[in-house]
Image (tube, rainbow, N blue to C red; front, side, top):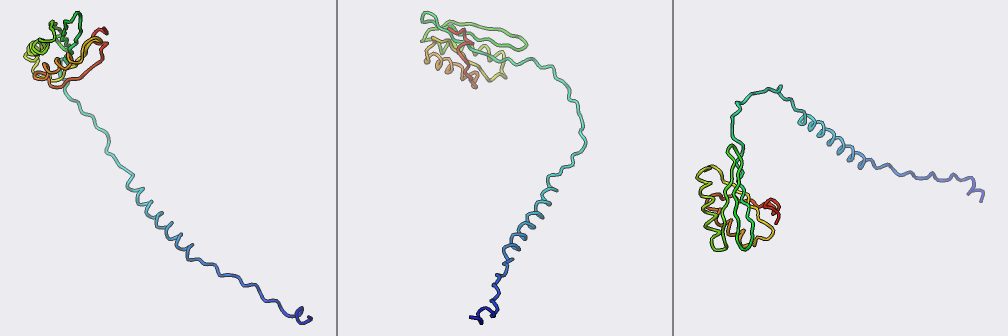
Length: 159
């Protein structure tokens, strides 16, 4: 028992610190720090001083923007073509279900002869106009103005 007391106690064993993961992490961090400094160079742009130039202003007429407004009253369709531009105007034709395509073609043929560069047409229809009448107007228009855009019925008078 006395020997147990006088005997030196063994020292506690301290584990060695494993520094390999720490070195791996530092290597990775250093790599990304070096890479990010090179990317900073790519984000710097040196632009030459701004210069101005003048272009001659052409005296163009405002756009024509033709619109076809289709309304219905008593099984008769009123097809009104209106346009703006330097020489605004409008034409109106009356048609029934059988003649709506031919009347639209006649109306737009005269317009296309007057404005050959115009290719876009806005089509509006009244609230009571049948869908078939809209399709017939589009069929009549596609030979003369191939780009058709539909607009709301309120532009056609909101019937």
